[in-house]
Image (cartoon, rainbow, N blue to C red; front, side, top):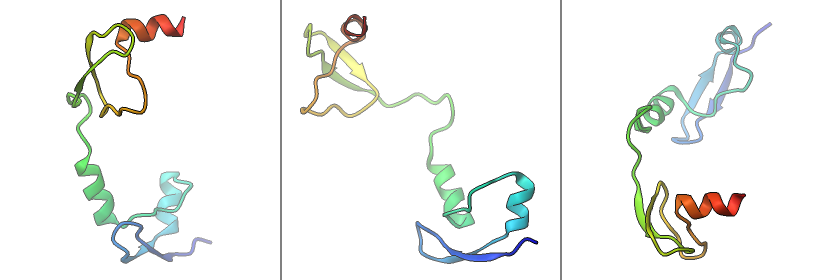
Length: 90
């Protein structure tokens, strides 16, 4: 009923065997797109849950107060402090 397939890893381009029965037993519905080594490397490169995020300091476009954001600020979009952002949402 289950048939193994040879797939190509999207990261390293190496072929790997997709064992359909194993994935069906685990309840996975989609075929993997990365080989085991690339999946492990990707998982290891992610920050641990609960780890502090890197923040960037910028100036609020509305009130001019200094604020921090969890993304790299770009000049093409305004950035607001928490208070101004909450006021705009109301």
